[in-house]
Length: 259
Image (cartoon, rainbow, N blue to C red; front, side):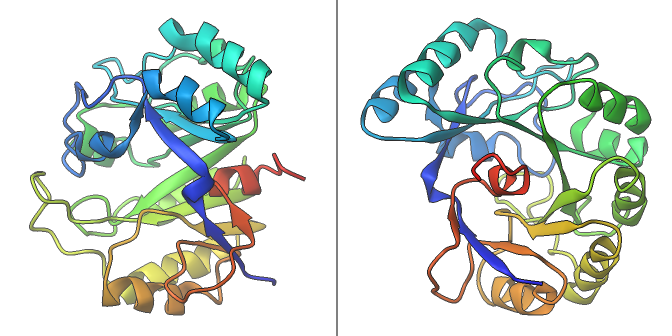
């Protein structure tokens, strides 16, 4: 196995809702939206040489992210500047067919246990129906699991990996970050040995496993990367300064969008 290092800097995150999110999830509470660019910024960034965007935003009460009002702009900019788009789609209950024309890859968060999803997001979804909805789309999709998302505890992760491996051969594993100002701010990150076992399990079920961009900082991150490197095919944001093998969202790499 050849371990690849990814720097996501070349993919610019955009929120279609600004800093607003209706769900106020316990692990995020719209905190990460504040670091994203706005829709209005996209045209300027593309004209200055940006090549790819992660298109996301706050989730509505129905689980959707409102992409539809901006599809004409996405299409226009894609054709004019040959952009690549990774759409992070939230938890819709219908196929988001409006993005098929412009999306190069879809990223989605997955919970094999609907009760854990409800405790974090205040949404309830049937995981089998979620997979069916994703698979009905014509765009490559990369599932994401946040290890320890329920206040640092390991809950649904093994179950989720087992379910996903029946339909997907690649997966991104993020690691819960205790974030100030959220309901989970005082929770610890998951135990490293437990995280290691999840990566080991994933490596036996998927052809490609990535440690995603969501990782606690400091000494935890270095230990994490050291411990999972024997099981991961991709490490995003490597602690050890090294020449990256790929610039941009790891989902593009996993989906073979750039060959």
